[in-house]
Length: 462
Image (cartoon, rainbow, N blue to C red; front, side, top):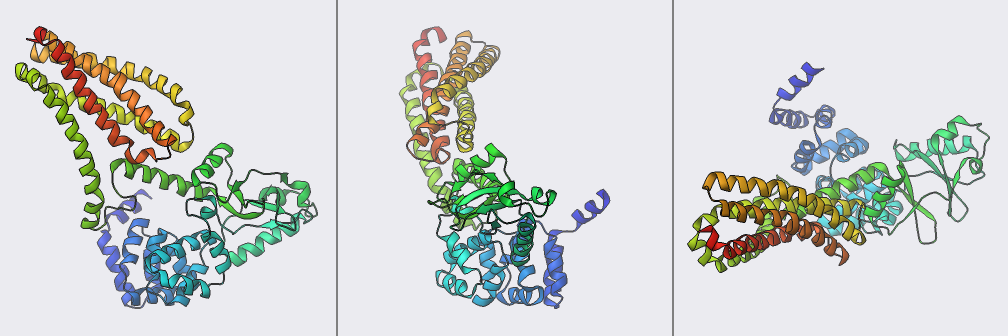
């Protein structure tokens, strides 16, 4: 197995793509589909996005709507929409009908963003337009926007045998998605209970679902934020959670793989926002588009960086008397900035996961002060020794070590906690600006502490 994998990895990516295009041009569409199906997701998306409309039509005609839909399921909804633009409305409808309802809704929403005039005609052609439109009625980052209508619901008087047959029928009609639970509803679709599929297999076929079900199951509202839904999955470890409307009627189900996508998306967005780049930017994005997204953030950061320069300018007389002070400015500001980012990252991620909330500010702050004290002692002492050995100046070692200790133990710890907590409390995503503000305060206050202490002890230093 190792030898086979190594051999496969030696095949250049360009060669496999050339083989796909050549096979497709030669009319062996089935073989082309097999080649594409073996690619990693990023490669598949890159090649399919670049296909000419005639090539997409050839794939549709040769593979069929179901197989093409299987390939598109490996892509983001936006990429899948770009590929489908080469097909007619009826052909797009055939392909999208083969997708699970939630994925179909995502693709239609992406098509609407790219070509608004095409979304409605495609829906008209779809067999499952009602399911998709019901999902599109919710915001994309809510439980309703993430749920699927592909679930099985039965009445409490149904038998285990009838419920299993309902699963077979639903799977035959809507694909082979795994269904781990049977939901129990009354005549008005009120959610009454839930029964794991495995229990139906183990009991007498004549047993009623009402006798098997767990009543009053955990549920989420269609309008609940996707972060709250993810928190419910983490707490209960379910494979799926039912979604209800304001009247408690079952309208959909969110599965564990949907929540995994949510967590991945949220983590990616937080990472991009902290870096000051667009949440849709990729390494393959056009250069001008990437520059347009990044330049404003860097300009904002540069303006605040000038604030640190202004602080340093206030202490020019001190630096002129002891130019050696300038040697350790980057160390003090850089180390404290990194410590602040460490703290802010932990707090931001804990807020996103629901582990803490703004009401826990004091307890989190006390903990980070403790951690900061340990880090401050370690690196403050280290800088004291370095300055003493390197420059042979005891006063310089004391000044630099003390400044770094205070900046790590007090400034970085405090701003790393208070900034994210305050931003969350006032309704702003802390991932967007907490990092840059934390760095700004660390630089400003770090230079102020360092050069302020040096100014007070200048006679000792000289």
